[in-house]
Length: 305
Image (cartoon, rainbow, N blue to C red):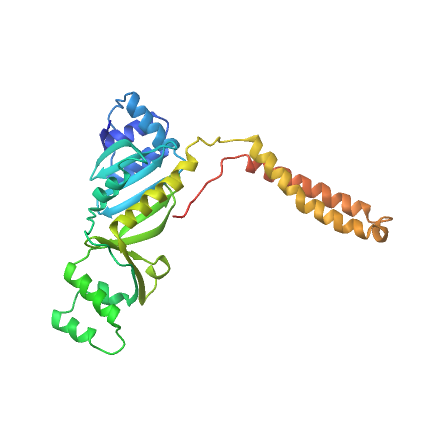
């Protein structure tokens, strides 16, 4: 499998040379770069840079500080992998049907358990998980207090014994990399993962957790990547008259409905109300025409995983 490894400065230089100045500036700002080296590319690097710059959808995966991975929409059969270690970027095209499971296991350092993992769901007090200022005997005393369920005790003890770190995060992102949306986070265990309920992550007291096997979750990640990236591989035109015409046709429906309702009682206003109706129709068509021009522009998409 052919791979391309670039430093952050070389990556920013190739992006700028390829006409993707905004992405280049983001890389320079992220790493505090001032001057960029001359761009030295190849046919493969041109393909990679074009895919990064034109991709209509990307998914980012965060495992730890200074280490990340992104999948960019490339074609219906493969995605472009962007693997980041410190200031080193490695790119290659990964088929969906081969090796994608191993990619996620390697990145998140996930190990499958020999025995099947039983799915568990629990809602626990968040501070019991993240508070680390108590001694072991104090924890045991707290966990024996009334109001702490047996499920909470079991889960909290597991978190303390294993020393789990911060959650891994899966992020969807706009093509221009300016606006991202966090949708899913999980904590890796031994042979399983704890999925964090997104509705309770920002909650000040309770945290929802769901325990599932590594194989099941990796399968979900592969399916998510394929479903999100595959439909958006074709390059979207920046200006399309077809999009504007479709918007124009859809916009005529409310006007036809209103006119049809007015026609039911036409005899009451036909003598002196036709001018007001004509003005209403003219203004409606005028503003609909302006909106149709905006509809011709390429839409921004944000997809949730």
